[in-house]
Every structure is written in C-alpha cells, then in structure tokens.
Length: 193
Length: 193
DNA sequence: GTCTATATTTCGATAGAC
DNA sequence: GTCTATCGAAATATAGAC
Image (cartoon, rainbow over all chains, first blue to last red; front, side):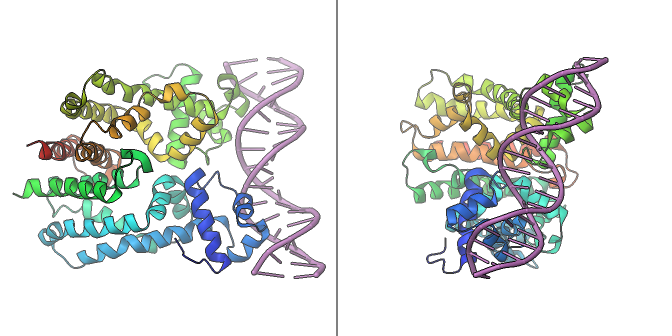
C-alpha cells in the first residue's frame, strides 16, 4: 500500500490491515500488531485511542475510494442512472483492483464492520457508499429487473476480483478482470435491447 | 429452520445460528447463547465439547446442502461440465433460498470458518464443496473465459439472494430470484453462441 | 513517542452436586 | 441433563516513568 510508510501511524495501519485480512478483526490482538511492528501495545494507544479506531480508519479509506465512482450518479434521473451504471461499475472495478486489500477487509469482516458502525456514530459518513447503493437498488422509479441486474453485476465482478490468488490457476489478472467486466456488461446489456 | 426443535441440542444450534449471523462467531459468547436459550453455559458443554463444535456442526450442514448439486458434475469431461453448469447453479440457488441462514453464516464468518478448519482436521470433509469448485475454476482443460464466467455467475446470484431483506424495497423474493437467475443465464450463454 | 507494569473485564472451559 | 462455582488465559485499556 504505502511505498514508504514513514510515520508509525501509517505502519500500524499497514500491519493491521495485513493481520485483519489474515485472521479477521476479532481474532487479531493488539499484541500481535505490536509484535509484528516491533513496538509494544502501549505505543499503539498513543496513535489510536481504541482498537476500533484502527479498523474505522481503514474502513473510511475504503469508503472514500468507493464513493468516488458513485458521485457520477449525482442528480441523475432513473433512466440516466441506468445508462451511467456500466461506467460507474467500471470505475469501481478499477478501485477494487488498485486497493484489493482494503476491499478485502470489508468483505471478510462485515460483521465487525456492521457492529462497530451500529454501536457508534459515523452514520452520516456511512451513508456515502453503502447506503447510496442501497437507496439505488430500492428506488421504485427504476424497473425491478434493471435493479436486480445492477446488483448482479456487482457480484459478478467481485467474485473473480476478490477471490483467492490462485482461483483460476496461474491465469493473468488483467485477462481475468477483462472477462469479468465483459460478463457484467452482458448482464447489463441484455434487458435493454 | 427446525419446525419443532425438540432436543436441546437442536435448539442450541438454532439460537447459535441466529446470534452468529447477528453479531459474528467471535463476538458471540456462550453466555449469550445460554441466556437466549434459558439455560446456563455449563449446559451447553454437555451437548458440545467446545464452542468451535457448534460452529462446525452448522458449517457441515451447509456443506452437505451445497455438495448435493455438485455431484451432478461427477465424472464429466470439460465440455460436459460447462454444459451442465447452468443446471448445477440452478440447483444451488434452490438450496441457498431454502437455507439462507446457513449460507449467510458461511459468508459472514469466513474468517472464523477458515481458521477453524486450518487449526484442525476436517480437511477431507471440506474438500467436498469449496475445494471442488476451486478445482473446477482452476482446471486448464476449460477455457479461462468460460471459467471466469462460471465464477461470475455464482457472484451474480449470491448478491441478490444473500443481500439484506429490504435490498430491493418490498419486492417479491421469487421475482427477484427469477431475474437473478436470468442474469446468470446471460453470463453463461453469451460466450457459447 | 515509546516503554514497563498493571488494572479490569470477559471468555472458554472444568469440577462436582443434584 | 442442568445447575453453581470457579479456574486460568487472554484481551482491551490505563498509569506513569523515561
């Protein structure tokens, strides 16, 4: 992620992201993070008041990445939204490829993520990405079949992109991504023609 | 799930499945399970030697459900496998719809699931479903694009099926499932024609 | 900014009575 | 088959020296 993680704070986030993806948020202790980092637990508390805050910071970073592509839909009507969706999905795919670990964190720890956001504030910030897609898929102004297919297109690209490294043997990542994009395109094209 | 969960063992599994899906496996304590059940922690230990064993039992049940549809692929060659895949996926969708909570457990706790299976035996039993799909998607005898599209088809149906209840407003579940099936069908049909 | 040392809590698991 | 009582381990978090 960070090429030269100068600050300790940044190194904590890098190591935490690694361990959270390997073992899960709950099973990862601050002791483990500190050990892999070469510091003590107490040092972590200088940079983050609570364990949750480390997770939250990583979550917000992913959140900002995912929100970017969605801004293209701002102020669009139903038909325009449907028409713009393929490009939004393409931009989203780019973000996922470039920041796979961050999106992996979200997928593999959605329980921890949901519970932390429930217990606390951050409702407003969460309403950017996740809640926005939710509103889109629940919008009765768009035909149901079209909305279902938009949801399907997300799942279609996520599985190959987020799956294990050797999911397709030693296949080229770009080639796989290309096929996944094409498949998602087919989902979205069909009911419009 | 169980209409009349006569045995305590069965009631434990039902309550545990509920809580694991609500809060995650790690964040759910035996104390919570016992309380919601109206018994004490110690009672749970009469039925299950360890907390992991509760999770494992639920996992194996889902596993058996998912393995069923895959048996149709037994002894088939590459072309036949590709040809049979749409029907396998349809059967899989039926299982997911009929046992949504069990598959949700797997999706929301894949970290816990992976770690528990790593720590222990059960490799042989796990090689039924998950490993079988893995082998299928890594099989060089099937064209890469075809394999990617098979993976996409799984993601395409899972997102609408496993998403939150109100994902598409108050839309009819069967209608949603129908559209999702159609979308998956389009993914699989395209590159063959 | 990082350390040592410790407080506090909670959890999984066990022993033994009933 | 369920209970009371408790153990031991591990976790988050804090206090205060350097």
